[in-house]
Image (tube, rainbow, N blue to C red; front, side):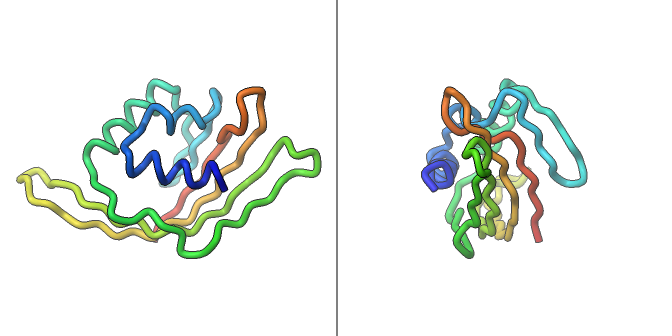
Length: 125
């Protein structure tokens, strides 16, 4: 739950560097029908751009996350159902409100540096 809360904090505080630090070096993303293996630099650039272009009003759980651990406590996953509300400016400078409901799965691996996200699979309505 601590990592789950940190992710929310990183979004609201626009902290791309710390957000990317919780991703493993060989992080895999499954999103919009694509599988990608972005580098740390690519993730930092992506999240820096994203965080700087939006203002979050809501990044809240619709229901409590489901969290499970492997028997040896080296792997874990969370299943998250979240409502996200944010504003951004369109090409004319007009502020737009976006409300999206997401569900995702994040797989974590325990390492010497703590828990890292190995993979995330995301969908939205």
